[in-house]
Image (cartoon, rainbow, N blue to C red; front, side, top):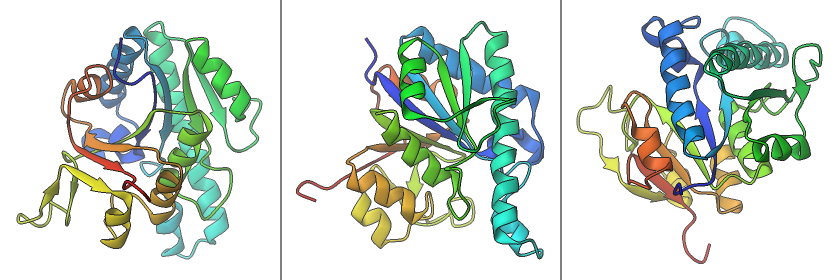
Length: 241
């Protein structure tokens, strides 16, 4: 029996681009598909939210003169593209996969509903929830926290390029301090940039634990979810909060 029964995994769009940082890299998709397949093989009910930054990011568009609402809508559509790509690779490995969308796009995928997502997860489907929250001004991190709560996930896993949360960007500051554990209060007070404040607040208010781990560490996801190994940084609600 796995340590966590049902999880929400947040993958950034940039992670799907591999070394290129833009577009979709087939090798990166296949590697993540293998990791996800290992979880489903162990009986883990798996839901995902993907970012869209490898195609378009709304906030970056604002700096170039885009209207914020239009920019965020373009970003939401980018998450649908990424979700369809991952669906295709997972189905090629024999997995049952459903893409649900926070924006109405029924000719491509079903509209997200909590009831439908729960049914699919119980039926053994990998559920990819695209389209963000369906509203502008919210990041895909916030969408991942929201959807994790909706599907009653045991934990939210945030995949990054580093092995946890640091006091500063470890890729820029060699003296950055790595945290093994944090409370959401600490993460918010220190304005740690691993997730936005809305996502932190949603998790804190609903006592949903979060684990931030290195997506490039082979087997780390399986060790965390199935074996319960301590990897990365665990963020929880403080006792009595």
